[in-house]
Length: 443
Image (tube, rainbow, N blue to C red; front, side, top):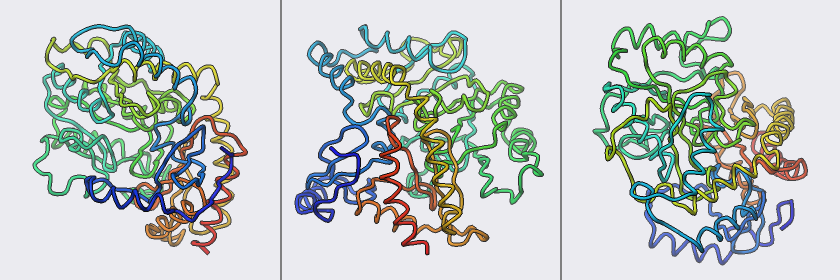
């Protein structure tokens, strides 16, 4: 595969159209496909469709492929493990890969205290495990979460999620006793305030207007956070926000659950995004990129919190030995290939290029992010900040037609989250397509 887009037939091509027709006949319509990309193969930062078109991947398979597509070491680990043992349920028996991975995870997650790990199949399952665990441990029934948050689509995690109405519509009643508070989205402050004059009222609001008035702190088990909000549009809070929040939570004995399903495994240039903010959470959840796209989710917590009794929670397929073997290689590759450093270096370069676009095109309202987790928020006018929703979808589809795979988030934000293995050369190739679409739509 090349390092540049290669369109040999206008997508979707004839083979893709045939598969799209079959797909519509047999697969549930509840899933939302962003554009008709029918992927056949991938390697590194390039994906190839069934008609032979090649695309620069700026979304990493929905942020699952931090070490790139089909990394040879991951492929070998999967093959080797599959030849020995594919499955034998970690919640009933024992095997080595899951123990090795748990040891690695307790080493790379924030905090020098003793930790334990629970294995599941996805980010939603990891978050649901955290919900059950803190309720069991604390005997407190209430939770806090943020507006704009996304923590999953099971009934429990959907109760935490507050990203889009479609994700909750017609599913009520949900799990009760979840209160939502505004996220520190400074570009669109929900309190219509401006930093630094606001003195970060958004965090004091949680204490003074929520915990002291209608969500009793002594009944609140945990607050679920995303250090950088994902589905809301890659929203980055002020640097000292979480430090102030953690002091409030600690004052009341409320656990901080750090959802790193999108932002973890090196995405931001740190193993976990919360490390940018000088805070140590009580619990970390992650999935997606952990096993390079294989189903695997984990909940890592302080040992004293993960004290629930035997039989109180379990699953059959979580911690699958093949997925665990892949995850061990992901951690090793990130270390050996210095991908944390590369994520930081390439992220700085991407931000610089995108900030230059912001100066040239009024449709680019905000550019924000850390490492290779970058949001480009599009607006109809930089003064009014009216979201350019239709324009964002138009840009996304134009990029697809020209060989760049990107996805949108929030109301009008383009997510840029390529594999951590990306180079300047591939970034330039992708940004050439992206800027061309922005210029065409936004001027």
